[in-house]
Length: 113
Image 1 (cartoon, helix red, strand yellow):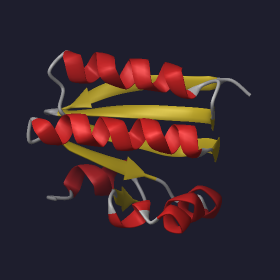
Image 2 (cartoon, one colour; image 1 turned 180 degrees about the horizontal axis):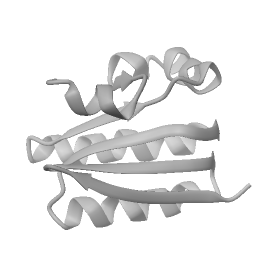
Image 3 (tube, rainbow, N blue to C red; image 1 turned 90 degrees about the vertical axis):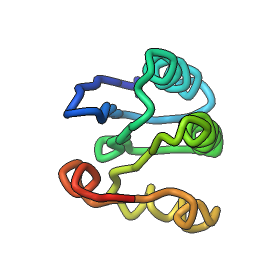
């Protein structure tokens, strides 16, 4: 399955909507797209993973790397995910304690973390 990525800006937060599978083949595309936003000075990101059907360790690595990048500039990176399958990946790796994960984009945007 291919990876789809779109984004929109709400106030000073960039919401990146991701769909499909994030794996060793598609993760570089996601990394590049997120880096474009960060390089453009958008350091407050919400990454919507609601339409992601699969994510491997390569995808997790991309998210961890981008979290480190935005933190350098006092930015934020919040995730949106309600899929038990994807949430389990975060739980097993302990990354559910590193990322702020929300059930909806609206919840992520409303949160002050």
